Length: 150
Image (cartoon, rainbow, N blue to C red; front, side, top):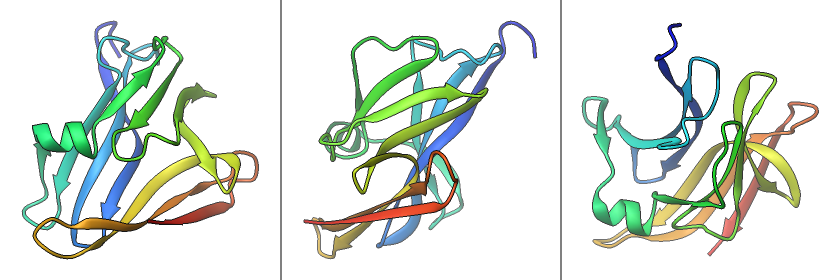
């Protein structure tokens, strides 16, 4: 890689019960595997229910659901983010053994998050029925899951 090369490294996704479209959260890195502090996270849709094209989040989605805020100042090796729709659980993003990863509390212990599955009630304005945090244990790599009802 050249000095000005940027790489987006997948962190986790959000999938939903209503269709195959997926929200992706990628960590933006430079060629030295440092977080690009000016815009560290790239969040976008892959519209799998259509043609699989990439789409940016709408203003509403950024501000009420899938957008995020950063807590404190991100560094070149770590940051703390909160998803708009679920700010109670902070996500710690770090570079661990040269591999980016996102950690969140799952069943009361810090685990690597891979996917958040959202079950929605139907209707014109769907509401969240439950979410499942799906990941793996930081030590053993075994699958972990927690379901949260609303």
